[in-house]
Length: 157
Image (cartoon, rainbow, N blue to C red; front, side, top):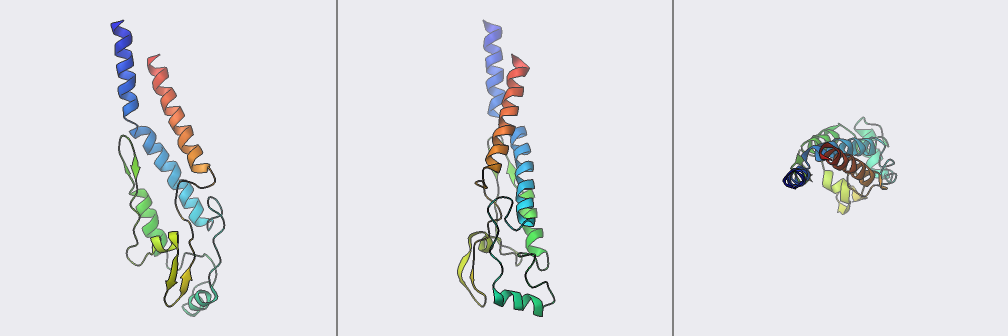
């Protein structure tokens, strides 16, 4: 009886610290978010709206491709965004990201859109990150979590 009780306590304690599963989930989710950015939304949230005519003219005048890639001119937004993805903090029970617009990278403006962003006018939301992307992210989290739980159960039983 004492041995069985000890095994249950050990199993419980192992399940309370999901750090290893969270690290795997973080890595896979970041990969999906990278792919989503590079596919201009197609891989998770739906194709981003094309750039407005004003923005296309502005980009062309500055020597950039006028219409593609949609959120890449200098690469600063992508660099800051991918850095913030990598900086997500893993704890025993969660993964925490803190996305912020910084250094001219308007991450939140593009993620959520902006009704009147002078001089460009309205900026449509172009989903970069999130957890509801056509079920792929939830599937990844569930698969990793199930594998992690099964490995603990099989270790002790």
